[in-house]
Length: 358
Image (tube, rainbow, N blue to C red; front, top):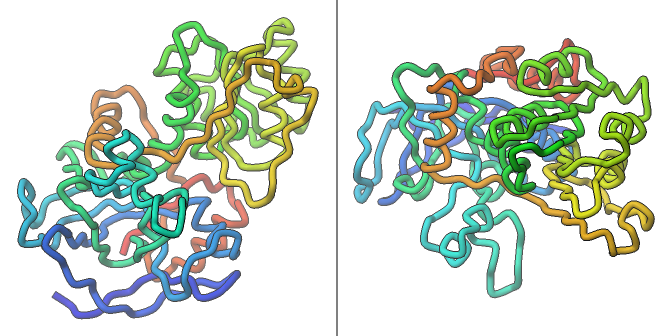
């Protein structure tokens, strides 16, 4: 077992580096994973650009697939050498937030006040998984064994992208027969499209301008494709719905323009389910909001974590309900991580998601 490892660290705004760091010590409830595959998330790009603050020197990344290298002395029900994943959200299982059913907000309440996103620890408040090893806290709550028949790339989207996208449909309370619009067909938006289909939506409208992404949206369940570079998306969605509007609009990009468009296509009493990570203040248009009298619901979601969530997502894949392998468009080694960030952050060469293998 080596004493040091390669890890991708945040240095300063606009800069990440691959550095040598000590391999983490394992506490009684922890597990040390040897990373076999991970990826880069849009949130990691926000971190790299300094748009979301983390401590200098922190290892970033929050989507691990790996093998248990070491187990804490109190961890039961797992064994070293076992293939597992852990969610981007790693709840303790016993906090007030967890016992209230909000595992993603675990640790949010402190004596200094409320802080959102407390359950998101990897690459946020503790070292993450764009490294050779990662320490998983509360292992018995968070480690989900990977079925032997599934490859790393098949389950790579489960820790965050698939879970988050599905959460958009779940929080929006999509019902059988609903009409749903999904704004932005990046990896999260595509998973929101797939989630809406699985939950029973019978008319799904996918909005983007990249032909390849719209084509994948069609494969994942979209009934109508709206290229916002060619048509006004609000006008087109209202035309497609005969002026009725949609039951649920899912915002999966994190901009004022997409948020406002999602608001404008809602039917009276409709729900805006927001998944975007916003870097600036949002403004709610007075008319689209019907002066607060439209019976609208606006809901935000940080995807749930924990081993049961991961098990359920892997069941979806194992039983052939969804194939997300096409989302992995590029592959890099950990030594190429700076090159991978450059490609992903600039969205070149048709990139959707990258697979990083140490």
